[in-house]
Image (tube, rainbow, N blue to C red; front, side, top):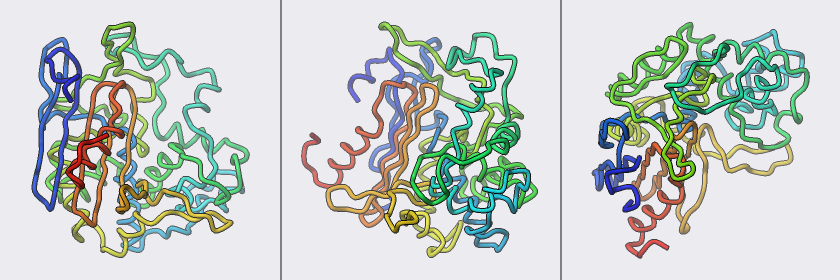
Length: 342
């Protein structure tokens, strides 16, 4: 982390957990260049797509309570979709095999979305800032999926926006409230929240940056900033310690339920994907690994877990140019083998 430890750049917060013990919990670089505020373990970062595992957990909790089934069709929750929604299931959405196009592309195609983003939060805001409900309405206008549901794997932010909308429909609660009452509060994740159209304040939050022509530029604004499910949880490495440790227990769901999250999806032809419910499923150095990375604005995030070795590496960065995935695997190799990272 030496390149981001000189006191004049954005940086990252890193957490290493081995056998439940914190091996490292440290901030590197600055959370805000203007104020020279350093990154600390209490600095909040946008999790970007690491949010997906929380959305999947909300769905699993409702499934375990008998409120929905993984094989329920999308049309059960949103009959406004065309007939193909009878073939798309909750499981397809979780596994990224539903075939829906990316909502961001659809919004750009409407011509209503200002395409000049991401940009500084100090810049003027766009006249049209769609919500998750707007996204649901837009996706319901798609006349045909990109492929038959279950036929192939294609990573889909749209699918996870729909999953959050399903949680709202089934629970009768705003997604932010469901997460707070069912996950964040029970685990003591008091610095974690979902950002939605209510624009809640995020205390002690990092500003995110892009290095362009040798200058760090803050890029915290897009007109899509209130859309959630696929993104939009803010958290800290200290809170993510609580999340990681809860996944070894049955505090949230039963072990058998959670195991589905770490089980790769299967396509129609029987081929396995490398994605469960909100988690990548890998092997590394011959060991089972599950994890997820995220990237939005200048935020780069990753959680990498080796459940059998009880090792977890979390890295939350506020600079687009930091390759958090590569660094997380290097850190993991050091912890798992003691060898110098290559």
